Length: 144
Image 1: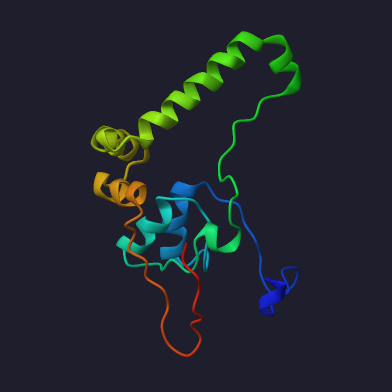
Image 2: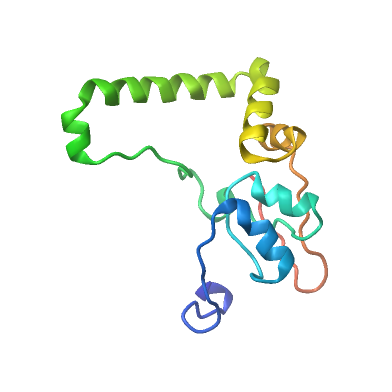
């Protein structure tokens, strides 16, 4: 923010919201913008209340968005369970990455999040509606 001329201590007030509430908060005017992972950015675009300004990969390349974290004590006390958990997570990642599973994955994720399955398909395939602001204040950004 500072590089863009914004003093984060004086010019903005940061609030923490659960991702499912961000679009509604933007729509109602409770927040002016949000930073969140997919699919909530696309929900804002599809509902006509927001625009995607930047993707995380444009701000910081090669960074993990999600992590699996456990307490050291729990890991020490449950090494077999932790190993099973890591194997299950790796298998789930392979399953999601397999294009043959796109329909079942998008349906399950959509149902869990309460969003349209087509929106999840667009997110998983990288075909997002990428509405960027236009006009004199818009700045070009790199795509990845």
